Length: 396
Image (cartoon, rainbow, N blue to C red; front, side, top):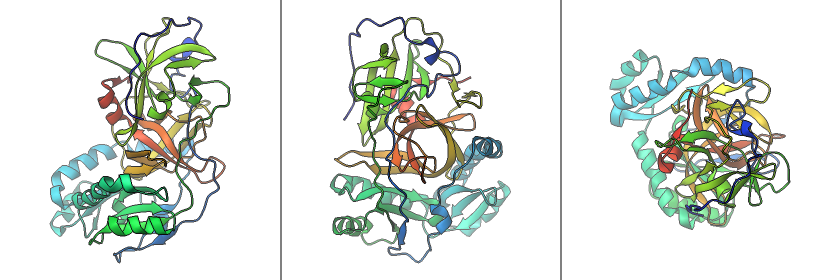
């Protein structure tokens, strides 16, 4: 759906709800596209060219209450800096990192025993692996290049550091198997998880509170500004592709500035046109738990707690289960670089904010399942979105 820009905005309506941009309701007070309403289906794990078992616990959906997520966030606050430091120190010996909630410890994969002490002294637990992260990322990049030929029965692929593999999630059928055989090539890096649940973005055309654009309902992600001080918010790109005028309660609130929904990502920017809107706030609305003030955009690792706010389903929490995932939404809509979580979502939640503690992580893209079952939701990382859109996330 590519990027687009709207020029010459129409006259705005001054009756727009000012609280959408100022105060604690700035993020996730509007409504959008989100995830499928499908029943959970058990996964079948198929080993492809490797003897390392895929741990069943790594496939569980981990649901956290907001209070549990808040407690874990305090423990996990240092993880981002620890991962960055170890990655630089280990160099080519680094095989990825993930947080083990059972041990309450950061796990770090390495391919050289000489670095065991470095990992331990940093406060993490080392795990010997066969392949370094560079090799795994290289394999995923190879599959990304083949992505245009992926059938709809290939749902997604991502690097899984805990199993030292590249996982392809797919339906069990002939066209998927043909793609998988080509994807794995002569190596032993690829694994397959079988599923009948397809990831999709769904436009929720039911009227109601929240922001609407075209026939879609979406959620505000994060407030953002430019060096010139202009006011915006970031949301999902597939929301901004639905039209030009952004409405709240049927009245104009903003205008679509830009949107991307393709292999480059799923992110969009809305210009706030209401003259009554005050300074953009740094808050995420948790509905009944008080607002969260966003203080930064440090990236949380796999296994860290994460929470999502959305206009349809409110505030829900879980864990980050994969990063840099390529998701096939069908009909040629393949999006790279998404983060996978065990948080549920509903139609209307797309574009809403993801946070880990007080750190902004991303905006909801789409997913599998719903909040009545074991849901999986993908988000577009916020740092990439803000950089490509040329804005800065508002922090407190």
